[in-house]
Length: 269
Length: 283
Ligand SMILES: Nc1ncnc2c1ncn2[C@@H]1O[C@H](COP(=O)(O)OP(=O)(O)O)[C@@H](O)[C@H]1O
Ligand SMILES: [Mg+2]
Image (cartoon, rainbow over all chains, first blue to last red; front, side, top):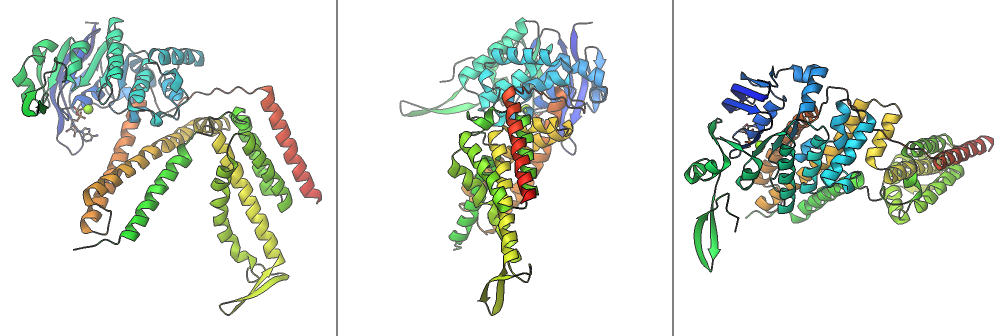
């Protein structure tokens, strides 16, 4: 099957000296799919994305990408690594980690330069990508002095400059203002329409209706506890509650206090 | 009830916070590098080379007068580069020569630099004699330090940090070294912010940072925690590099465009240095 992007079988992963972070994940991702991985903090979403990006390797089970098993070659064999890196891009949860260059311009150019694109091509991409993400005015700035929203857009630009087939997003909308969230969702939806495969880890249930056709829910047991269309998962109130994905708010309305639960598809009051 | 000695802890607290603020400001502010001024408009490579020439000249010259001329040139450049002279003097003259003064003070005296007595006085029953040779050497030393420091500060004030790093690469420093330096610098800021945040967190929990047992434990715990976070961060940064195709040999952007006026400046700078050195030789 040539359209399978990722295939995970019985994947286990533990951080050194810690409790396991993933306990038996089976997952198949096809080309052009739009997937969300949701789960409370610490359920292993970031770990999964790092496995998919060939940054860490499972202790048990295996991860294959494009029909090839991911293993140390992703770090040691330069040609194979470059072929893989051109196809898969990860936007890290922490933009401060992802942006390590002294200027925004250099951060965006870093990927394409490592992957051997010509200087001319790198400059073309720099211009194009900074236009798409509306960060042209930031090119000469120092990344760490930007706002969270600007950092996030630069981080996305640094991956877009590689123009991969598969985008992995780790909590792309966490902590952002509504208009930046909108911008990023539009970016994701558009990329998918252009045929890109999208895998997003998030616990922001308000956005998954737009950014996903299929949702995988990670539970406290570090396994996939549910899989389905966003609507069917989101409408299961007790299931979401059991997995710490919705919370109960205490509100004041007309000086009367009452408890109510926020459902993801309803607007936040 | 335990009463913390407010004065002392306040002083320490203020010192730490202002040191952090200074670190962030001194190393990371690019306000002046972004202004429109003469030095800012020069090609960073050529600017750096001309400043290296000035530095070598100021170190080679043995006449305080000639070095002062170079210092005067430096101040003129400050004015033409839209940097407030007061701020510049503060940053250079106030701090660093103070240290050098401490170094040269002993050499003034006959016990360290023997020679023709210039001034004799009694201090705690000791006969102290300042010698002409000692004074001359001290003046030369201070002027030289002040000039060198001013040159370095002026170069770093008027050049964006990312460009200075690119110049290092241009001058033949290996890319991996440049990348490492740029990252250290980059994460210095995060580290400073982290320490600041931790400090605020401790304060909000303990009230003041004091000698209290509880305070000390929190500080110790936070130092360990900060260390953990930094090492974990370096692993993650490495992953972020791998993720974008890094395989051990960094390739970085380099784009410089030297124009005729850059070459004209370099020519003038080298002529000035040669003139000063010649004058110093014939003096
Ligand atoms: N670098 C690390 N070292 C040790 N443990 C880690 C590390 N990163 C994550 N973990 C642990 O692994 C588990 C899964 O973490 P993570 O994948 O980051 O979850 P999520 O992204 O869903 O919040 C958590 O229990 C977390 O504490
Ligand atoms: Mg995470």
